[in-house]
Image 1 (spheres, one colour):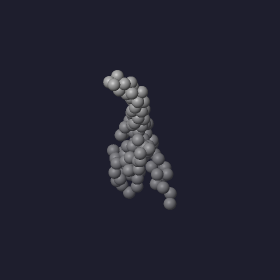
Image 2 (cartoon, helix red, strand yellow; image 1 turned 120 degrees about the horizontal axis):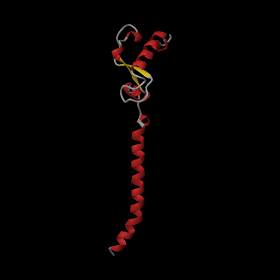
Image 3 (spheres, one colour; image 1 turned 135 degrees about the horizontal axis):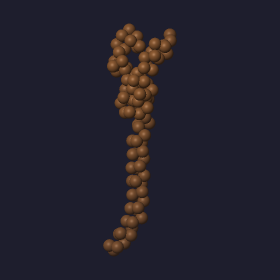
Image 4 (cartoon, helix red, strand yellow; image 1 turned 180 degrees about the vertical axis):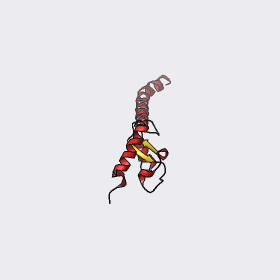
Length: 107
């Protein structure tokens, strides 16, 4: 059986929703492609009223369906974690270089 998401009627609705939302994720503001059902109403997916449909980016759409994993964290969080790790390691390096000199002063 053909997926209802391949039906021309759904594609027409999805195109209209993406245009309405200016191709922006309604959760985070990034570029979005997926049209997400906030709730299903009607006999077919294309019968859902427009106010129950919104554009989502891939990340937010997967999150809405509970399909995220640790590798799906937004890039800004990844950069924050990596940056913090680099600073921590740099601090350890400096401490290991300075600490023996400081201890020598108190002998």
